[in-house]
Image 1 (cartoon, rainbow, N blue to C red):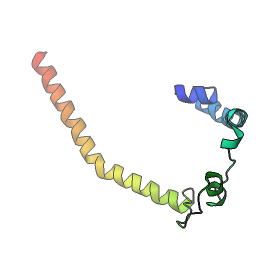
Image 2 (image 1 turned 90 degrees about the vertical axis):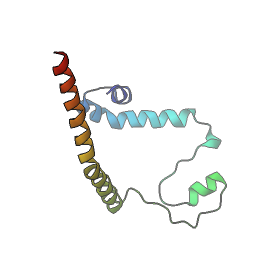
Image 3 (image 1 turned 120 degrees about the horizontal axis):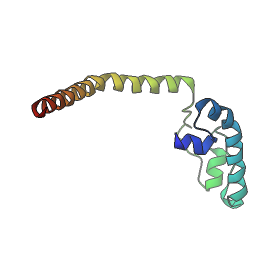
Image 4 (image 1 turned 180 degrees about the vertical axis):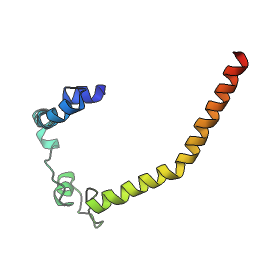
Length: 110
């Protein structure tokens, strides 16, 4: 919450969302005002061309990754949920065991 408050001027999530666009614009302006011009590039995620030119590298033959496409996000979310479901019995069992041991210790010394 401290991070959100510092970044967006409020720890209230509703107000932080209202402040987000202005906070982004101020941060963006600050970066452009302070970063050395020869080390700065305004880059839109359209492909390798401008980025490779700026870095002085040849254009990659590897396809440009489009990680913000809906199908990619849906697939990644499915993997995350699958892992969570796979590991949840272990987590539940661990919490129950620790809880049972704690209760046993408390009863012994009570």
